[in-house]
Each structure stands twice: as structure tokens, then as C-alpha cells.
Image 1 (tube, rainbow, N blue to C red):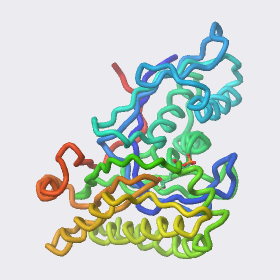
Image 2: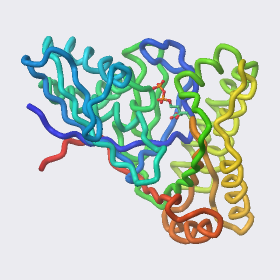
Image 3: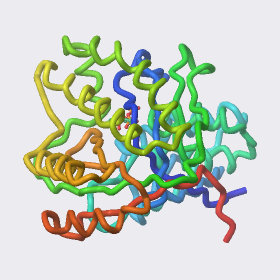
Amino acid sequence: MSSWVRAHTNIALIKYWGKENEELIIPMNHSLSLTLDAFYTDTKVLFDDSLNQDELVLDGVLQGHESLKKVQVVLNRVREMAGISSHARVESINHVPTAAGLASSASGLAALAGAASHAAGLSLSEKDLSRLARIGSGSASRSIYGGFAEWIKGYDDKTSFAVPVDDADWDIGMLFIVVNDAKKDVSSREGMRRTVETSPFYDGWLQTVDGDLTNMKEAISKRDVYTVGEIAERSALKMHATTLGAIPPFTYWSAESMKAMDAVRQLRKKGYAVHFTMDAGPNVKLICKASELAELKRLLSEHFDTSRLIEARPGPGLHVLTR
Ligand code: FM0
């Protein structure tokens, strides 16, 4: 009972930023994302009585204790559900285009939830897979589904999970501007904790999420890429504004990120329906029409090396690979 399972990463258009419960990963706010075709993780799990500890092999390299921690949260839950006690060997391959810095916990922990439950002989509903992925990493709860997904924050382990919103089978895409930057990262886990605890702007963030989410779902139902992007950009800017009020203050923006944001604004002036979003790092992600990806890439290649421009289209949900 061991198969490769694939999950694609997702990018939030309404960000998850802050936890109400750190152990169970219950978020402070609802979020909404688009799953993408370009980045994904394949994972296989084998529960094996002959192992005397859990093992994680990522891209062919045996990982240490630190990377194993998140993985064991999911493995332990699966063992508990299936009533098994054997250790597991987890093999995982990240498919991320050569430009570095895009490895995401969303696809990794979603693929793990799928592979571990499959290997343990459990056949979980999508809702329960989403809950299982969530305890590994919050954003992974949304990667169970293709297209647009909403993570309903809920109030406990049973009520916090993602649901599908729209299959995104229409003219929408994302273009990544990969920004290289030597600055030391503040992980999203640490960044959101610090912001919730210390930033006076955090309450402002919480106040507008529900309104943005309602408007976002309406724009999605109308397949209005301009408004989807507009709301996503505003949401991202509000999230990033909270970090400047934290103690100590921090930002995920670099000079290159600002150059990329400016390039997007210039394209918008030229009439393209294009906006940006950013996550817990300096990369900038454009939200645009899929049919204009090639043209936007060509225009941006005047300012950025083409190796740093990656096209993405809506991607599928979690699935078992047959090969
Ligand atoms: O994806 O602490 O899921 O909604 O990417 O593992 O639950 O890595 F911009 C930030 C993702 C946060 C927004 O956080 O955190 C989003 C973010 P964990 P994640």
C-alpha cells in the first residue's frame, strides 16, 4: 500500500496571516487561493515495522530532525487514525523550476497528507484530507483542491478546513518574478506570530478580510480577472503593512520586489489587466489573463532575466499517480 501522490502548490489571493491556535493551526482569518500547475510535490510513504525511526528523504537527500518535525505531526495523526505504530519512510520530490526560492510547504504537506493516509489504508474525504494537511502547514489545507479554494477558519480541529470554490477553468494565470535576495528570511510561521503578538496594525488587517473575501468570490463568479487581481493586490499590501508595525519590525520586500511591483503598475497603465501579490518572501507574483502570459513575459524580460520569469496556470487538486 504505497503510491506516489501529487499535490500542487497554491498562492493565496486573500492571505492567511495569523493563528488563533498554533498547535492545531486554526487561523485568525478565512483565506482564498489559486492552485497552480507549475509547482508541485510528489510524495510516497511506507509504514514499515523494520524501521526504528521516521525517515524523510527530500529530493534524494536524507533530512535531519528539524525538517522531520512538521512531517511527524501529520504521520502521528495518521498513525492514530489508522491504529498503527510502525515508523514511516517518506520520500518526496519537489518539482520547482530551476530558479530557487519557491519551495513551498503547501504542496509538500498536502502531498504528505495524501500519501500517508493512503499508505495507512485510510480513505479520507477531501474535507478530512484538508484538515490533515492543515495541521502540517496551514496553506496546505487549500492544496487538496484544484482551482480556487477557500480555507474556512473554523474554531477547532473539526471545523477548520478548505472547500473548493471554482475550478478556474477560464482565462486566469500567474506570472512569477523570482527575486534573488541574500537577506535572512523570517519564516511565515515566525512572521505571523510576531505580527499577531506585537503589531498595532494587525486589528486593521482582520477588520477588512471578510469584506475582501466576499468581493473576491463575486469577482471569481463573474470571471473578472481585473477585479480578482485588484482585491488580491490590496489584500497583500494590507498583510505586508502589518509587518512594519511588529516588534522588531520586518518586511519581506527587497529593492527588487519594489522594482517588480512598479513594473506591474506600468503594465497596468498600458492597459493590461495585471496586479501582484507577495507572500513571506521577496518574490512577486502577477495575477493576469492566462492568454496574456506570453506577452507579459516578453514585456517584463526587458527588466528581468527570462530565467526569473515563470508562467503558471490553474492546476489540479491532490491525486494519486499511477505509473
Ligand atoms: O499562503 O505556519 O502555511 O495564505 O503564504 O505552516 O501554517 O507556510 F504570505 C504568507 C503561509 C502564509 C499566506 O503560511 O504557515 C498564505 C502565506 P504555517 P504557511
